[in-house]
Image (cartoon, rainbow, N blue to C red; front, side):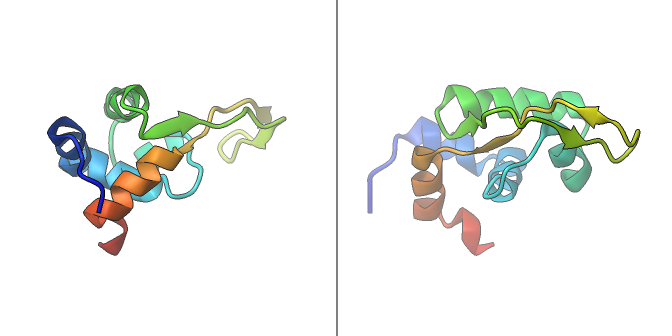
Length: 98
């Protein structure tokens, strides 16, 4: 098992970020995360920025177009996913076992 820095472990184990990391096993947009976790959009952005800055989450290349469920129109949306480092750290902490 890889020995993790305490600050990264604390970052992951915070309840909201823990749930977000669990969701980010697959690609998710901030809006999707907010809906699935029943969080405010601003809250998702706050925690998402921390996870990206720590290298645990990465932006995915922008898709050509995603269909907007609400408006039925095509829109550009940024999706995020676990980085390779993030996946390893989460596996070591058992994030995916919950």
